[in-house]
Each structure stands twice: as structure tokens, then as C-alpha cells.
Length: 521
Image 1: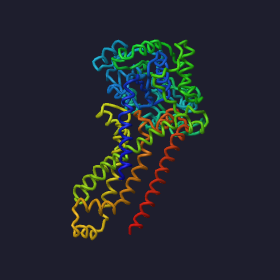
Image 2: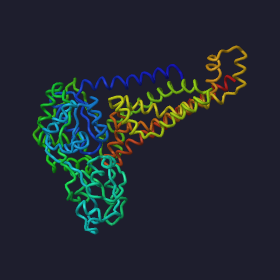
Image 3: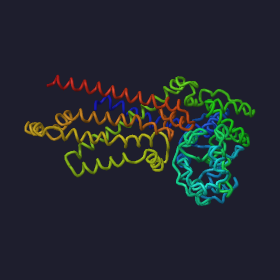
Image 4: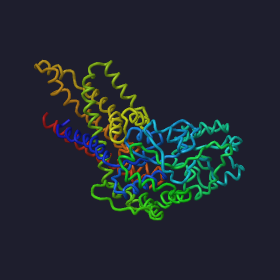
């Protein structure tokens, strides 16, 4: 690798690892899960805190409960909207805890607190199309026992939660085997009236906007399995001391949102394609909250909401966040591929002559390729104790290692033995033979491996948005949460374009290298 390119890659890695976390320490960090309501609430909290003059950094769409809670424990975020039933059953594993004081007492030893009940309950429920429910005369969850042929499409988190499918199946003795679906896609999988659809029953949040719009029947929880899920703020106990003005402003939100209001805000986002910041601003104005003032120069500006550039596809594609997301995505790709090359080429060169070690190393990197990306991210968050750029870069580097190392070994193995022996006969040392003969001859194959690793990384880097590391994945994650095809494409197309640009760059580099070698020969 040329020194100039290596320098640029290292500079990019240093900027991504150091600049982002340093800036975050000077701001109130608000996180959120990956569904419509969470995006709205994050923006509502951020605007409320900024109105007090507090610098705010938002981390919406981080993923499921496990990832957001891990981020809170690690100090990567300071507060996020959560629900009492989830805290009791999923986080504390204490379904007996029902009141806010009980939850506060249980969380205090963990350095966490819960406060500011926002005023609405967003519970779990199962629902199906009204025409199917009427035909089957189905109105309760217990009635599902007599309908074993019904196809259940449940969100992955619901399937894994103790208060979700496992507890529900045990309480009611349900015979169905559910299919895992993203929550944002489940409504579409139900199909239209008169069509069979891909699933019959889905899990819903009771404040989902599409329940009424699609005319769904919510099955009554006749055995009272689900607890209440009152919306609250889960926060680090040092937050009130670190940001007293913001905490005072956030407390004013207590009881300010009832269920019809939350459903209406969700509908504005999902059905009317209104930006989250606009929805939050409108609600604060209606609730006579403190006016949302423009942030002073010292206050960190909030990044534009994905797709906020307009309701049309082209407005979303070329929205004001495009430059920021491009810089983040490009930085992730360059830094992770650069790290993979810096680590993989020397390691592969070292083990290439030794069949046993070469097999072990390539086998280990091959196993890494089989680990699901989100599972690897969850493990890295647990090990590193943080979310954001660092675990994302580490995961992307591990995924990029295999093609780099495999092609390095293949390229070195393809160097004619006669040339190596001739170099040895001329008195060249092992290092000189490697530098002047083996690596230059293997360079085209190594470059092909780097090319493959780059293409893989451009696509895989979209997962970085699940843990707040940015990139085009922000649009894709938000589009999944809103079931917004235009926003999904607005994230996928720039990633594809970036991959094509890298391909063109590598093709030009390969052609120039071939011409240069012909000139030497």
C-alpha cells in the first residue's frame, strides 16, 4: 500500500474514533429504539432540552431494548424513552414490580433512574384484519387456541422477550409457530381485504397509527398476560446533576401526552410522511411548552432527520443529510478496510509459507463471516462498553479480513518458485525477496482482495446505523421503522452508487498497474 493512502486511512480512523466520542461528552445524549414512536419521542425530548440552552446529541434508531439499554449502562447515552412493563419484565426480570417507586428502588443500585411518566400506555397486543377476524369469529387471545392454522408474523424482539411470545404461548397454550418479521413490515404482510396475505396475525403496539387506518381487530387479552407499558424516561442517575436545566425542562413533559395524542403523532410520521422534528415542534406548541428557541453557537446542532429534505423521493434522496451521511459512510469504509489491510496483509504474509497456520488463520476469519452482523455488534457493545463508531469499525474490520488475507495467501502462492530461487541466488535476503519480488508479483491478486473487501464493507456498513454510528443506514433503519419505501431507496441507492464508484476506482488502479508493469518489462 502506498504511504500516502495508508496515511489518509489512518487519519480517517483516528478522526472517526476520537472526534465523535469527544464531541458527545459535551452534550446531553438522548437515545431511542427503532420504531416510529421512539423516533418521535427522541425528537420531542431533544427539542425540549435544547430550549433550556442545553447542547444535545441524539442517537435514534439504535435497535431493540438490549442494545439501547446496553448503551445507557455504558454511558454512551444519558436517557431514552422506555416503558414500565419493559423495565420490569425485560430489563430487571422482576414482573412483580408495578409502581414507579418500586422500579426506582430496583434501578438505583445499577446507577439508573426512572421518572417523568409521559401520560400514555403503549402496550403489546395481537391483531388481525377485520374480515379474517369476523370470518373466524375471533375476538380474544384465548380464541387462537382453536385456530392452529393461523400464521403468526411477530417482530423479532417480541419473539425473544419473556413478556412477549414465550410468556404468551405459555399463558394461553398457543399451538402456532410464529414467523419473525420486522415490525415496520408486519402491517404490509397482512395484505389487503379479500387477499390471503403472507401472515394472519401480527404483534402491535397499542399506539400504532395503522390499527385504525387498516381496520384491524385487536384481540382482547382475556387472561391479562400483558402488563401496562407506561411511557417514562430511563436515565443515568448523574443526569440531573450534569444537566440541571435540561432535566428541569424534561420534567415538564410529565403527563403531557395521552394515548390519542401519541397515536396522532405516530400517524403524522407513518401515514403523512411528516418529519419527526416537525411533529415534535407542533406538539410542544400545542401543549404550550416553553418555546423552542434556536440553539446558541455553543449548542450542538441536531442533524437533519432522515428524509427531511422533502416528501418526494428526490427530495429524500438529495436531502440536507446526504453530505453528512456520505462522509460518515465513506469514513467507515475507508477506516475499516484500511485497518483490515494493515492487519491482514502482514498476518497472511507471515503464515503463507506454513500450511497449518495458514489454514487455521483463514478458517478463523471464515468463521467470523458466518456470525450475523447484529449479533456481532451486540457482543462488541458488551465487550467495549460503548455504542457508536468504535464497535462498528471493529465489526466491519473483522468482516473485511477474510478476502484480504485469502487473496494475499493466494497471490504469494502464485509467485513462480523459480523467480524466488533466482532472487535468493543473487544474494537477496528473505525480507528483500518478499519486498522486491513476491509482494510486487502478488500485488494484483492482493488488490483484488481489497476490492472485494471494499464492496462487502460498503454494503455491510449500513448496519452501523443500528448502533448510532451513522452512514446511509440511518435512512434505511428509519425507512424500515416507517415502512417507507422511498426512504429505504434513498439510503440504498447512495450506498450502491458508492460501491460502483469504488469499483471504478479499483478498475482504473488495476489498469494503471498493469500498464506500469508492462512498461517495466
